[in-house]
Amino acid sequence: MTHILGITGYSGSGKTTLIEALLPELAQLGWRVNVIKHSHHDLELEPPRKDSARFRSAGAGEVMVVSPFRYAIVHELRGAAEPTLAEQIARLAPADLTLLEGFKSEEIPKIEIWREANGKPLLYPDHASIVAIATDSELQQAIPHLDLNDVPALAQFIYAFFATESRGI
Image 1 (cartoon, rainbow, N blue to C red):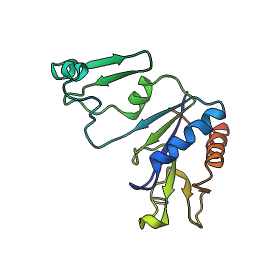
Image 2: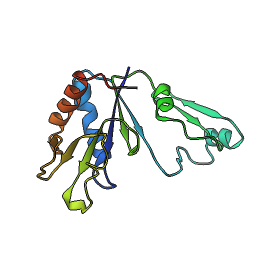
Image 3: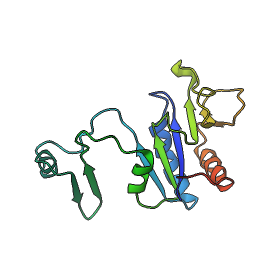
């Protein structure tokens, strides 16, 4: 079972930057970590004239591109429903933790990234699945608030959060 944790917040709050910084810290704790980023925009993973794009354009349902360094599978939905979160996670290699960027409406544990300088309100307490707030400001909230700039402490919080609970999909 993989543990699932969302990193949520408004655009420009630093979600991607935080996930990028957390990955080596969580690896140092011995965890294999996957990441799923949700986008509301079309994905262009290769230029339209590349072979793999031509195969998709010609009707392939999936195209796998393989090199000695990595591989990628591009799956065309062609009008089908977007896969559920559980279906997306099932396609990934086994991991101890899967971090999600986006997915605000999913009922999974989340850490909210909040910066007072952004001028946006907190998502918490309107989102009951938020278990902590990572911020660069002082807060008085009913849930843990963590120093957004102390990435090792954030990684330790995540590790401890899942060590004491059985949370996953």
